[in-house]
Length: 513
Ligand code: ASP
Image 1 (tube, helix red, strand yellow):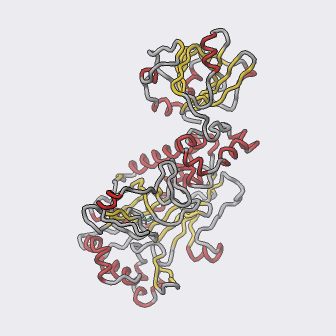
Image 2: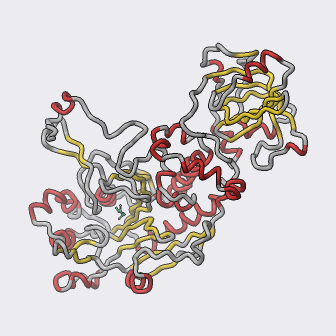
Image 3: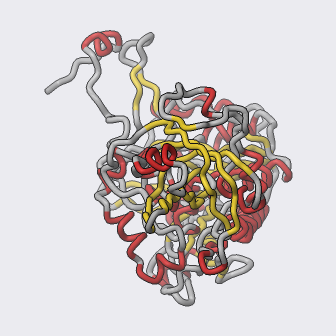
């Protein structure tokens, strides 16, 4: 599964045996450097040192077979009965114990070859064994079927892994992440982020971090608030998105900004929604809408193409290349939704139907509150020729919003922005803000627009959702290392949690029961 070269480059080159007090070893040599399981395929006949976890164990007559697991995958270890001390020690090994072994890499006899794992041509005849740590019996099974082919045949391996109660998986996430599929998901996530960073860098964008402790910026959700100790009664908001900050970076003359940005929205969690999630946040100056669409489209096509080089099971087909473009009005008329699923064959897990939804109205009418709500957010620019309609018929105004939909899921949205103070103020008023509110909430942005703000626009594809679909997962929790439960709890760490009386006093906060 893993690209050998990459794995090789990433190996920490130290020996565990120098770090762990040796209480249970037989003959282990400290001088040798550890290699990874996957590297044994090129070392037939050589003596090597490996370290990892006991994945499973099978006894055949006199022989003990153990699958050893490290970050690169599995390798079969064989213990022969001749060396009694070694054999007795091997006999004690149980699942998830951590060991270090030295042995000779042997080519397996033809009928013993295991086609399903990359090291299936070889095995390690163990000469030395050191137990680095024991393990309690894990609360669920870690070893899942490593071969997609087998899994698909009897779906059992995968189902067993997924069947475990999710609460248990999240509580023991460090064990859950030992599983092949979860490790694969983290690995691909890393690779996709790397493709993104390289691509954006090549296109002249620079990554800039924006603050996490900041001020509320509306994206249609509730804010997470952080009380200020130094300024009693005042609060920071965690960013729902770095929207205003990226616009201020455009005023600052950065021209091309991106950030793999964490966003926080206090809203009900669903399968494709988490209270904190990761976006590829992009903003550029002096651009046309089509520049933004092309940039993102070419990046996504590149990611889809490269996926298969990381895992051969991830070959995906694009239904539309270039992506389909559809007007908002047509999407509603023809498909009854602004997130149409346009796969030709929705049963096919390999199909990816990307669609751009364009030409949105600027506002929708909020019948409950009897006011205009922005279809995207308040910073989206109206089309120039519709600006007069802001005074006469705001619902007729069309905007420069662009949404990206993949297989019926919204995976990104953005727009060309307003960069003139007068128009921005008008929009704030139309969505029901009074002068005081406008000044308190957005005075800084309006002022910035008076210092030579360039025309600009951007987008923010949601990376968790895109990864979920690319990897064929049904829930974004499967592509996030430490996600939260449906009701917003972090079960690994036990958050949210009580805090001490002193902490509350420091923050001038009283809990009302
Ligand atoms: N800030 C927007 C969002 O988070 C994206 C954008 O307009 O660039 O959805």
